[in-house]
Image (cartoon, rainbow, N blue to C red; front, top):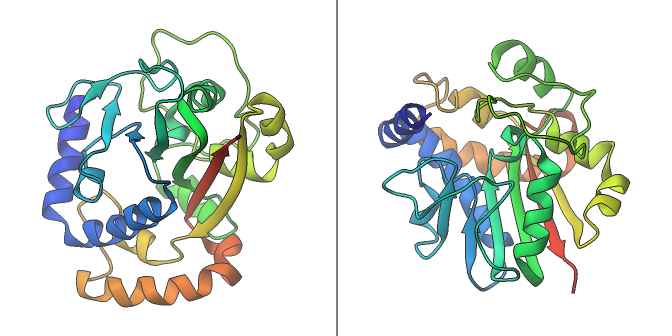
Length: 241
């Protein structure tokens, strides 16, 4: 697992298109955060620290650029110590997402925020994720189901549909399962620049010089076309109180 994260960090360093697109994601995330201490879950290649130097960055494995090694389903912090918890491409990898959401409820201060960036399953993105991405898309899953954890599960196992299922089919159940968190924002973004970039793959179909203009155009189109063709979903959940 650490080998894959080291490879992602190398790709980040070598691919300006990727940095430009994820830089936009991170700026959106920082803009959604409250003032105060922030925990990053699933810090991976450690890129958020460029914008939030004081962030406490964690992942399930030990890496030299991260601060804490911990499972997102059982985080080693006292209650109500963070103003924000952020996670990029993490929720859909967690075996029991409801456990992480309850941990976020426990760790956030009243009025704090959980900010998540996840794959969005839309009419345009679904066939691309289903056919060309190695991670599965299971729209029949229950993202709030609890149960025993598998000791042999690969932490990179995933269901890319988790965030979309929470928003579209399980919003009422989410309010019951984690009553201290309220979904305040669900924004669909990344219409074309992200899929054209190839993500963390070595190839790209869009030059880095065109990314700022493409992102500017996308921001104007997101409110109209996001639910039809967005590849990303930005979720903000507020802690009650």
